Length: 141
Image (cartoon, rainbow, N blue to C red; front, side, top):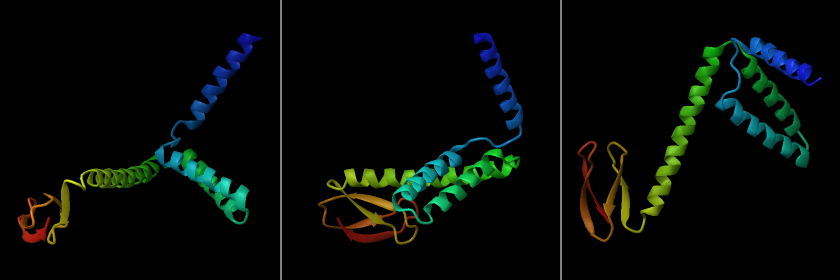
C-alpha cells in the first residue's frame, strides 16, 4: 500500500512537471498578487460588496499568468515589478537613514540636478556645492 501511494505521488509530480513545461509558473509578481487577493478576500468577508468579484478576477489573472506560455512577456512583467519594488525599497531605506541622521545633519536638494546633499548642522549660513553637477547655492544648516 505504501509503495503504491509513493508511486502515485511520483507519477503525479511527473505529470505536473510535464504540464508546466514551457509555462511561466509562479514568480514574485504572482506571489504579490496572491497576497493582494487574500486581502481582497478578507475585505469581502468583512464588508461584502464588489470585493469578492475583484478577488475572483485577480485570482483568474494570477492563474492566467501562472499557466501562460508567453514566458518572455511574463518575465518582462515580473522584471518591471521587481524594478519598481526595489526602487520603492531603496527610497524607504534612504528615508530611514535620513531620519536616523536628522540630529547631526541637514539635507538639501540641489536646485539643478535634484541630488540630495548632506551638510553638518549648526554651521549657520553656508555655501553648498553639489558634488554631482558643481552647482553652488547657499543654505542655513
